Length: 157
Image (cartoon, rainbow, N blue to C red; front, side, top):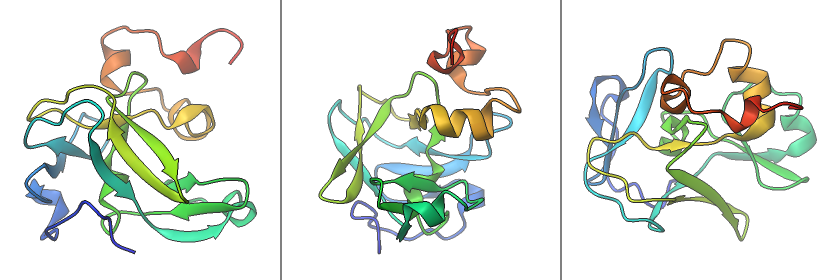
């Protein structure tokens, strides 16, 4: 399955490659690897990209060690590793600028606010992902670096 919003192809995702006229894959914040960056202004509410991958039963996904799992519902999960899944380059941020909406079994990514050229696209991968992959090494997102309280670190979580 191909991402609906990807018009070009990735030549080499490790070298600041333009994915299409809207974004490019390049080095992100230290400790976060590659990220997806806007090449033009993306308006609040605008569709950005579909998170794609292999559809697998959620109980099997629960046993997987993949970091690219995105649950559709209790029955199905997408395993969408990069570079095939361009949306997989969207890194975590505790105060993100994009959000995922599940629509007819598809995971669509929309802008939560206006995103300027050069700005990294970020999403909150939620508490379970945070606890499993981010908390053990410490959050490296821009929000935490700026001292903003992470909703995942509030008392009782």
